[in-house]
Image (spheres, rainbow, N blue to C red):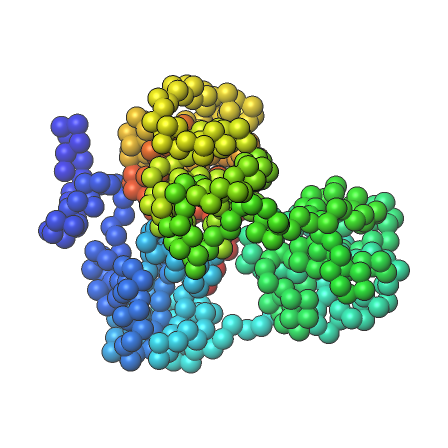
Length: 551
């Protein structure tokens, strides 16, 4: 191969089109596993259908789930290949790249949060996660006598998640099925906040430092309040008793209150109210003086209004009966939806006596198939229907007056010339207050996206909206990561797209909420990143450097 007219590198791949194309896209890149002669005895699973097919085979199966950028995966690869050759015919060893977007469901299905992850199957059923050593002989020995992971003691598990040493002092109390009731009874005079967590949970890891800081602050202030933690994966009795359905779940105990479901507080064991404090300062303030907030607002569909709430059963039937119908596709957590809801409701009341007009709404968190069918890009999305037929997306203002004006004569409103939209805001105005490093974030547009991302070996792109609070919160960390990588990994791009201005890019990559982080390799979308958002989380993900092999 020649580069700039000079000899650059000898082509060392198979003489087939697929290999040649892969090589030309990334001549410096490593040979893909499925092209490596060393892995000829390994079964390469390219997609979930391949996975389903291999499960039907009779041989015991070990699958190595990996990401191409993972350094530990690369180290284990030749040893795994040697083991595959030695046990050929007795066991089937397979690999699957779950960093490809089409294989991302596999990560969720098997809760793969680190690489490499090896899982053993028999008769089509998942049996154990691999817990052996990191040599060929270790792999073969384990296959001959596969065993479930050794359960750590409560103390070991707690120490691993909440390390306690000279550099990690904290006053979090660790409880379990055997110790919980006694501890609560003995400390009945103290307010106690308990976090139910799972060691693999990213949100738990994000909350952990805040709890530790709060425990230290309470200790320094000589408060009698207590912060405790329970590993739900090791305490099934308590998890069932308190109906733990997600992580982290915080419960508060005292003589006055008991908290359920993420700070849901109850009196005498019955539901009373909810709060949601996730920072050390607010946790400390809450424990010092727990106060009852206003009762939660009932769901929109449970409120008595003139808005008709649709679902899969009544969607088409009701729309077919109405000459003019607006449908608001919304999510309960969406701030813009909450703002538009009372105005939309008031407009609906103006037409309550008109049998030909309907204002309706559909909760996309509960009715996903319908929202997917109508390609809802974000919330709220409002669409106009005529006798059940979709006509157009509502594009006027989200005010009571605009809703009423539109539904008074929809045809006239749809044919009105649309005003010229204001020019999009300069992305620099959004990023310049991020702190040092923001200038290393590539601010991408439709015209520059392919040329910049396409030239990178790796790229992490944040799709954001200028009004999005979580996006604003992510800016400083994202900028800092960009600054660090700019000097050490010039082949890794950190970029950002204002999805409200670059709608075609948001649509192309199916961006449904903000921020959305998409990971690209060699210019191609590889997966959506949904890991932790700390600097270390992002740097580890992009560079592959970590202190622990997760097997």
